[in-house]
Image 1 (cartoon, helix red, strand yellow):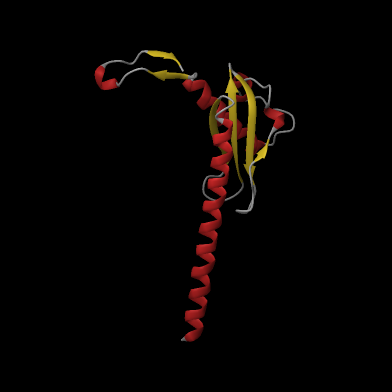
Image 2: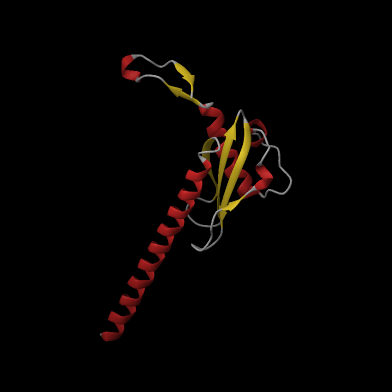
Length: 142
């Protein structure tokens, strides 16, 4: 009976440690993304399988349709940290949102960058001025 208790206690401790480290990883990446916000309009994209498997997160900071700064978070463990991605700086959102391959960027990271670029293209950097319920759907530059 004690063996079962030790087993389930160790399992619960391992799960708690994993949850804590995943939380720490997401908080650290969010802090890095918040630093990007001072550089321009920011969006984050996810590439890879959503539930199980390799994933990559790409955060793009843009101004006037060009990437001015970028971060990439990828790794199999919760020890992965976001890293600066200079390979995106200078690229246009139009190129990133398209289907063309980009040298030096693998398929999973490319998928994440495409999602972030499409989000930025869809928003266009414009913010609504009023609520839909008031019929004020006009847009003005942010």
